[in-house]
Image (cartoon, rainbow, N blue to C red; front, top):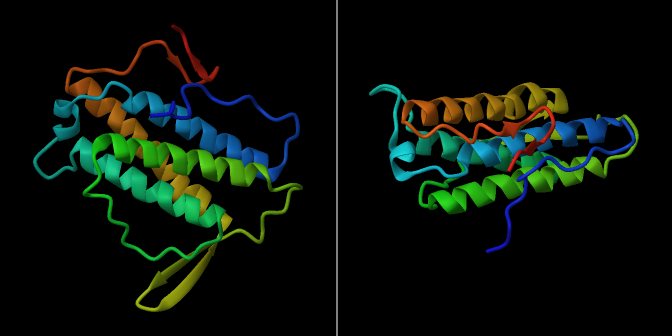
Length: 176
């Protein structure tokens, strides 16, 4: 198996463009997700904060759903929910999520200039399509992904398996 992306945050571009900013936000999510899920155990995956809450595994599936949607936006594909990643193993979910983030980041990085008006989230439900601007992607699925990564970190701490204390999201690398 090849090395998964986001062991560290990729180097920053020299140019501040709208596409590069979205790309860098995604890179930050990728790094945080990588380390939130590195070394996760079966008991961590099964952990639930309470009976009515999602398990860590269910949250990871939801994050995978969100990143699938982000990738579809980056490739300008119509999103037709629901996605079904329930049958994937944890390593498959992790790999798919990390590559969704990396591929989306790379696509946004290719957007030159500062105009992303042409990027939309197109959602299909009951054969009807609804279009949302990129703003909704930023405050919706991208922000929601970060929120849920934080849940994974908290759940791991609660289940007795905290993430590597050397993770440094501000600098974008993890001390050995």
